[in-house]
Length: 434
Image (cartoon, rainbow, N blue to C red; front, side):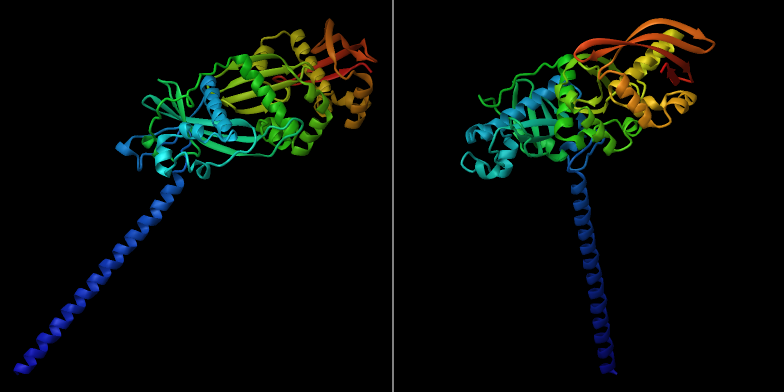
């Protein structure tokens, strides 16, 4: 009997040991699973925090639980001041002035990467030849007396007669607006690092001067920059077109490329001769005109963030619609005739063909090719219009005009009778004497 009791006690102890072992194993397994999940979640979070876009905020991992916001730079002076700081930094690298490069690096970046004057060559990507830097986008945040700018751009070799190889050049610029000094972090920082950035001491290498960019200079920058894209990177020039305009005017890249090839000699010689600026709530319109009366219309959402239209007739601007709606019948006909002349000067024969009166088109120009041949053989390379007398027949406007141009290096004029019927909105159809 005593042996049986001892056996029962031993069995109970073994059972308890087994139960405790199972519990411990279960707890350990759950703990590992939680840790693994935390690692995965941290990886996902870190991947998503590399860059914070406008109108987004992030609070995780920021000291004092502060919210950091990066906004697009819309101040012209600030944008080009920061750009000049980047250009100074690039010049130090090209000159292999390691001490100067070291003195403009931000203290936070130096300490984080254990950089000194002796090892800086191994830490900073070399740039062997003088480069042209183009700033394409900037965003900024403010922290006390310093401003932090994330700068996205490209650099390419400065060659005389050809475009050098181009590659991305992104970095962070820190401005101290009190003592007018800057420092560089040669990469785009994570947003949670902003509160860790330290100001740099003033020295002879990191001082900056504020640039002042007026409206005329800005208009010319857009004009020259886009002209350079057309001549050197036509695909990028196409991608910069306003979406709706691109589809209506060219429909695809091939037609755009053909347009550029047809007008390449004028584009090479083009200079900005006139501009107008229109400010709206969320954007600014720069309407630039060259010596051939070609239009380059830039819709600016932030500095150097723009879309382009290459005429003012494919999509009517708000300014044009307002002017048109407040015009008399005679004035509306004048505005529309000017549109047609612009189409002809742009060699945009398809747009002009599409506004011909259907009966007139069927009788005289059954195909687009017929119309194009007529225009090429009748009008000048560059045409201007002088308005003479206006009359009406019912709802039809009739204008006697002179078409002026150069023929055999001599000024010449052709008389035309333009017949126009207005449609809804700004639509119209046209015919003329043959």
